[in-house]
Length: 106
Image (cartoon, rainbow, N blue to C red):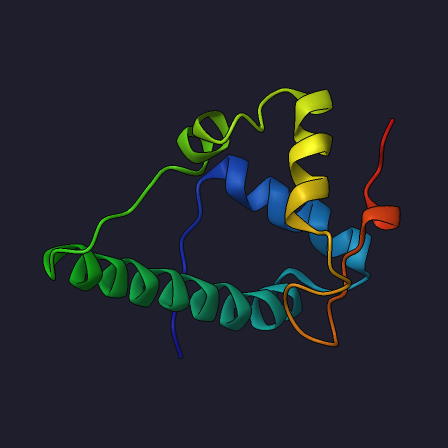
């Protein structure tokens, strides 16, 4: 058994959320805590994997920089460039098909 001491603000939030879920605060914590701990663990493992990737001399590019470099930051020109990329019915696999008709031209 473990005792957890919460500040007033967190305790109030927990009580409010528990009421919304029709659970006791303890039941809500038992339900949510394992999920959040697993998510946190996954995020930490991803950070470590990324650091190993970067330490191995790999290069990473910020998605915003790539979008700008490819000229995809302008909506109208983006559609034209996407038309060229997705001329064929599929660029991935049968589960994810993209064709020119599916691109929103608005």
